[in-house]
Image 1 (spheres, rainbow over the protein chains, first blue to last red):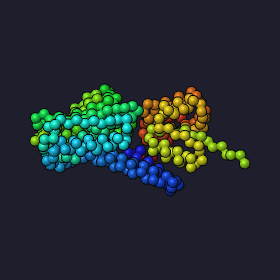
Image 2 (image 1 turned 90 degrees about the horizontal axis):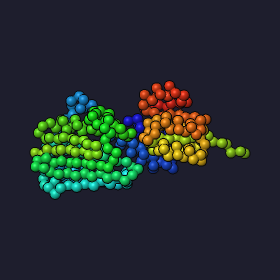
Image 3 (image 1 turned 180 degrees about the horizontal axis):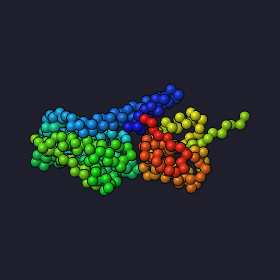
Image 4 (image 1 turned 60 degrees about the vertical axis):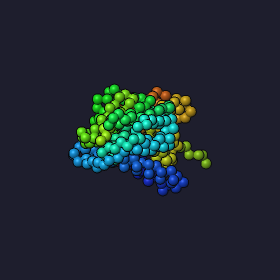
Length: 209
Length: 109
């Protein structure tokens, strides 16, 4: 949290002395404020999880539509931020069948986004990389798979990946997977969710009712 | 009137916002500044001998090569250059106290 806070304060101090760079500095302040907000939300989520006050707002929604929306959003984001990485998505035909899920849609979005963020983070900006997202329906289960051509999960960190602050990234907090696992667990047995992590693949199993 | 010689500073921090802010602040303070977000590129430039620097401002935690490692490599080329290290992590102070580093700046936020 110190990095975006420093950037906001630093640019705010300099903006008066460099009016010619005002536009760029305002964009940087804005970008870091969003980053700080994201980190703050992660910390708040962890607090709720640890105090057992994480409340879910369950509702019925179509998981196929949600996946398409999330991936479309990320395609635009990746094109803007990292032109060396390409995102491909492949949904089997039957994913478009109404597949209602009774779950907290915002929190499911958060879990899928966390997995995508991990794939993006570890697919190097220095060379071309590919992230492929696929979704397949098997009876009442939807399996979302995210594969990347990045450096892979470090075997040393694998055993503690779902714990707090487990990260080798220089930009992450290491809370994403801990929060995602907690969201999955909070949904309990009726709406089954499971995250499986392999070296260069992440799979999310969603059981729909 | 002779042109006043400016001290030259090399800033290396993997966060682009940090290099931008440090560069502008130091230039406002009258220094000539070069900044890099890639420590390997900074080292390569230093090895090319194109420029001499009076001071280094180095972030400690960086991918590929941390600030301490970069400083040790630079000292093999120029052992007179002084360094200031930047960190947000308290545990880095132990290393700086054990070794002969000139200055450690901690993020106070």
